[in-house]
Image 1: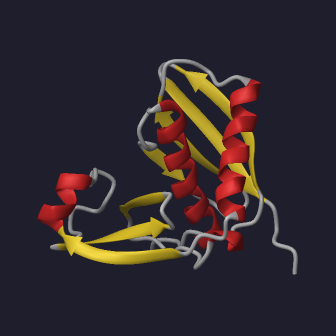
Image 2 (image 1 turned 180 degrees about the vertical axis):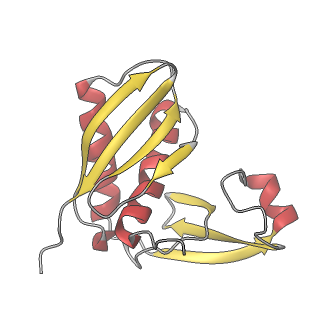
Length: 148
């Protein structure tokens, strides 16, 4: 049985991916490992991140989170989705209708995972570490607990 991915971490992954696309034009991660305490995303990249870039990424992501963007979904045909999205990370038996998860007007991508309803539910985003090896940038991140 496949384990369930934490909705807060999964939604944060989407925001991290779009932030990397916007800041570095590197594309979304090609591999991710999402856990409740700490998660990681791997990107095709050409160098390590600077400390200043790490802080800029964190700020950009936390700004999106604080904007309290609504997370929605829509279904479009597989043919239509292939025109706009990379479907490589979806299961091969995904079917004819593809679920697109949208984070406000910040991000939209195919996904079959569970997400929070609003970005404010995510909590504070922090990069725990970033490393670079042989063309792969790995970003490890964690989230603070929400204040109740």
